[in-house]
Length: 431
Image (cartoon, rainbow, N blue to C red; front, side):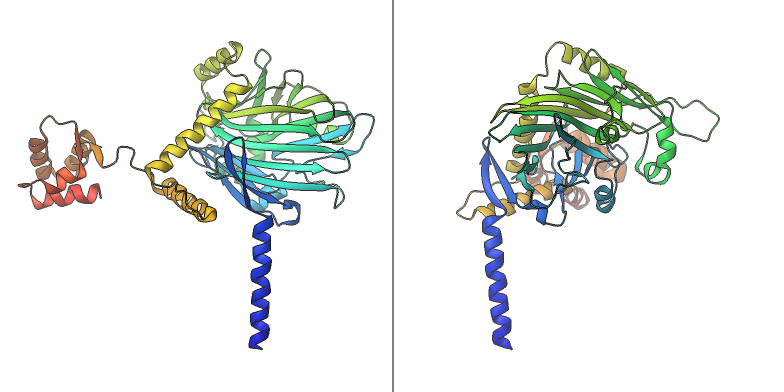
């Protein structure tokens, strides 16, 4: 019996070692370390976090469903649902992609609810070492096409969704493609309201399209209320495209179903009282080995001045494709700087151990932050804190500090003559 158990455990270890060897390997793409997993179509869906150096948040499943926003769930771009609901709403909320080969009604929906016959697609997942980039790739073996969706964040642009369609067959491919985001929320719909009164929230939604910059503006006609008083909604979420100048745009979520059913794609640029979307309609001709890439930039809580400023920037040509990618790269640089402050990056002979250490440090930073100025802290902040909690210690502290604008922890703790209350208070405040 003992020998049987030992043999079983030995086989399990061998299988786990073989799995780790073929999956979860570390590769380098565009100068970035990426963790790559093959055969994702055979794995149960699992959830990941997209990290950022700002206030973005994004939870994404390996099947392509996701939710995202800024600050907290009450500032969401897509509904903040639990993992099971995200999986159930795949295709109707979040990412939507559908392709047809010209002259055929055969449909392919990468990472959709209608997967092709088993064995005709292969999925690969890549995630950067810092978690700030997630790439989902699906290859249709019979069609000879590869579809990649990459998610990044940028402090200035919000969430950036990049899509690449590549022809890996020896023949020219003529395609009709619909791609974009569905069930886009508007500022003013909080997480609890969305979960309890989503249909009522739809009735308040409206969307308009700025033809000059091809930007969708998503807002509420008014803030939902039972009070007999005006409640203006003065902010909007925005989505705009880069690298898809020839594509048609619709803001109607139902256009996705129309395309699947074989109906004519209709552009709708002013929508009220229904779910909202930003869908691109492409006609692509790809030679063997050729690919086409476009980007969707989505951000939240724009007021009138911020919308006008962003539109002026787009008209002035400030945000071509290389500038969008550079803005995302700057997010990665700032995130790496935060990790360096927390000693989160190490290089040893054990690569997986290095990645584990980086991951632990990163999530510690996300939970508790880092010390951007080391052990030096602003005096005025400490003055206000002590004044609020201990008036006698505050008088002593202000007399001792004098005109100094900055202090470090060691100076406070090692200073002679300070009362025990003040020394202990400063030590407890800045451990």
